[in-house]
Amino acid sequence: MKSFISLAVFCFVAVALASVQSSDYNKPIMVKSSMPQVTVTLPGNKTTGYSWFLESYDATYIRPMKQQYKAPQQDIPGAPGESVWTFRILDTAFEVPRILRVKMVYGRPWDLADARTKIITIITH
Image (cartoon, rainbow, N blue to C red; front, side, top):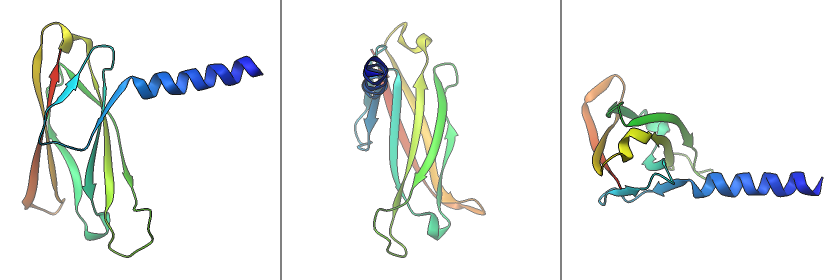
């Protein structure tokens, strides 16, 4: 039983160390082949009808893995939450250093004319 708990803790730490997390998108996200998972956290508020959408990315090098909305910790009507996106950078992206871009759009699905765009830059090395 003790070895099972040790193995579980090791796996949790290994997964945590194998990803890069960022919420500052004015700077590029630097990714190494040893840590090919990127977690992107964007502010959002589902109660307004707005959501984040993945508009474009290079499928040769990036694979979207999951997206989830995290509600605010405080139970205040209209309080913003977070949209958390997880991407895996594929092995081919590390053959040479690359600049990759993921285009995200924040808007209402029925009114994307007023949507806001966010470009996330990922640099592999």
